[in-house]
Image 1 (cartoon, rainbow, N blue to C red):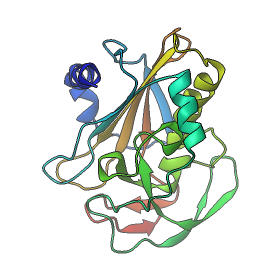
Image 2 (cartoon, rainbow, N blue to C red; image 1 turned 30 degrees about the horizontal axis):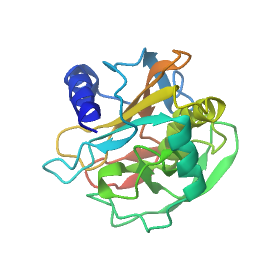
Image 3 (cartoon, rainbow, N blue to C red; image 1 turned 90 degrees about the horizontal axis):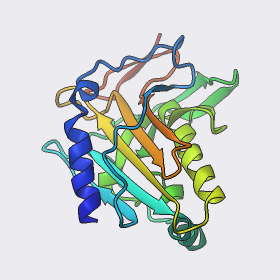
Length: 227
């Protein structure tokens, strides 16, 4: 995955403007917690399939993950099934993970734990259950209403559907996710996701906001308060 790592470094070098952004969630513009902000910022599609991880930063936080997949590789991952290895706690995992009620984008109500161990590259896309692939995400950041229309799940679903429809080894998809932190905060404000398919039918950059309707978040401690 040398070419993948080099490609990721090139793309990350041009992402400083996004990484430095405030990334405050606005329900009016991103009711599903995900917002398309432009075309994918990827220099090329590397030749080798698989997942490359950016490693942990100086604060022990996951940084980025870069997937290149074709139909046969994706099919092998599906046949292997879900990795049931327990997920490690991302750096700074909150001591208190309250059970809450959150109004979901589809008008329903989520009742459960506020914080999730959220993958940069989903296990359904071949991502690994390792610290380098996990960030602290709200339930809304992770899956939205869990209907494939919001959160990280929205972009993951685009990628999975494309791979399922393109089983040939000649068809490739590139997927990159990068956590956006402010300072030394252990909890990202958002995750930036770029996806580019070989045929160009998917070509986008999305910001997935790490927020939850009705709650104020302290990204340094993980404390949450109803608003």
